[in-house]
Image (cartoon, rainbow, N blue to C red; front, side, top):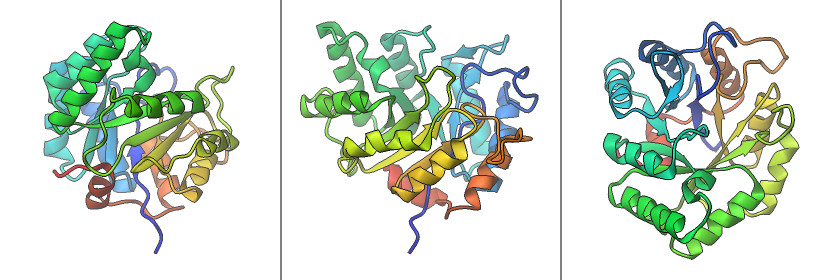
Length: 273
């Protein structure tokens, strides 16, 4: 039987604007509409960012709560993961504060951001955050930007900074192309992560910067991973043409795999709602 593939839609991210693509969602209403279209195309979970009045990335509890409420009303079949992305603006304390203010079912957290400078105080804060999140049944997807970052994350588990996962294992997102000069990923970039051993994790996903996103997703699926696609990282279809919207990127990927249902996604990510 073909393994179901989680398709997570990432429709806007923190940096892009409508000047990058007119269909990029900025408001909560636009994000919900884009999420509905992505869900219809095969995505089972939304990776959600919210913006302020000027369209800038913001970690704002009330905006997140409003988005979650709107999603429950408009797209109840789709799961939602909020982000704590710092964008050079937010401290680890502010990142953890937003999580416990919103109390989402799912959240993505950059391990390198949360561990900060790895000083004693930073490690103590990270340990407190990860243990509190687990105690409150908040499912963290750990973002890892390099094989070295992956190894440091495994060491943090061994040291008890990140608790042993209570629901069968940790869930990680591998980011390809973040540190290349032109923000363009190569599917072969995944191999360095694979060699660092992914077997410790309950599931893993990939997101990939640039026009080779689709090829990177195929490499991830072949290796047993899952996928995050959307305008946050890429605006182009596999043939190199500009995608008309986020849903088209999701549909293109869904046609190449067996998209996970809501229930299958919950089972893979450890949720229960």
